[in-house]
Image (tube, rainbow, N blue to C red; front, side, top):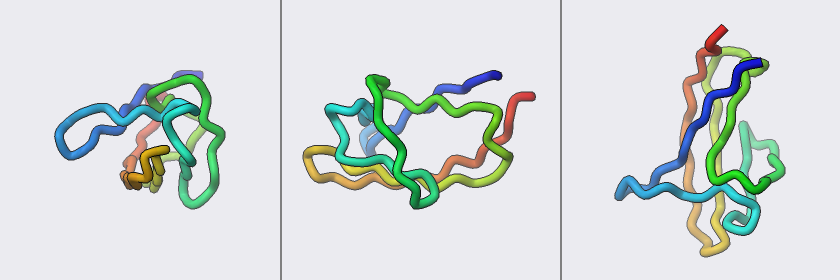
Length: 74
């Protein structure tokens, strides 16, 4: 299975870490994901094509939202 790496950037273009020590939660389409040690999101081809809504809350209390318009590479 292929995986594609995505990073979440703030308004200034600085990467927002998605690692477990940096976030309170990460949600994909309203469902909680389990953060790990990765600062980025690895999205696999097992996900069907379409739009995915992400919400991230950092330990600093900032909430970020993003939409990933996913097209599998296979």
